[in-house]
Image (tube, rainbow, N blue to C red):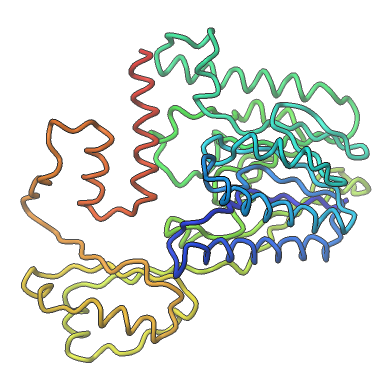
Length: 392
């Protein structure tokens, strides 16, 4: 039996691109490719591990388009006779109401879970633990007033208890955990400090199952002995530049000498991102006409980061470089940004003691040249840390 494991589609509008919808179209195209490959591979079951959407709170016209795209993908699989199990992901990305709406559509062979529950597929039990975050526990009286480290420990303990309860539902046949969490042995790509306030799936909890299929971290990987992150099928920003997008197919080998799952990663034809880093010599070479060709950037999202003196920067025409990149076939030039190295950093005039922390962080991020999405992520982390301090 072949089981496809997909997550983190993040359908949404407003990604950097030629138009607000261009990256939405990229995601749809890639996800259609995924569906076709799943059908071609003869998979009998698809596990979607959360984060179908980019943002939870959006206008109704945008929400309609995003839900329509996800539903079309689900119907593509359903029409091929494939069973699909879907869980909601991180609350900031996935509005529970969207998943409730999809469930009410009663798409044949599609089951949608927004609360912990189990589903059976033949002899296999799929234990569903949808995405949660710190705010999911904040209203629980048991968590009120706890300092951050105790709050985090109690969240993790609660998840382990839930896994123990669900894993005991089936005494026969393989058990799969389908969830949207950070696993404590995973390669997250972030500093541990950024994950201090996230609920954690421990290795102890993961070992209660024969296979763990996770969403949330966009780095596809096998972590521990039985835990898999499918990653995102489509790249979403420059943080994914060096990540190979795709999904997993897990095959239950019941007749093998030792029964178990055999897993294969399937790369997808996702849009590429590419960063060009230039020093002052590169800028001078460009201005002298010694650089006039850019290879390998056709249909690619490109950014240029460069360092040079203030005098050279005044003579450097960034618009001519942008035109050259487009002439070379770039899909989109995201930015051409100077990263000025200073021996004495000048304080951002906009960052004053009178600003609140989130506004000051946004001003600082803009001064440092961070993208809007990166600033938003830093602000979200700051909010979580501030809440933890307040509770302490």
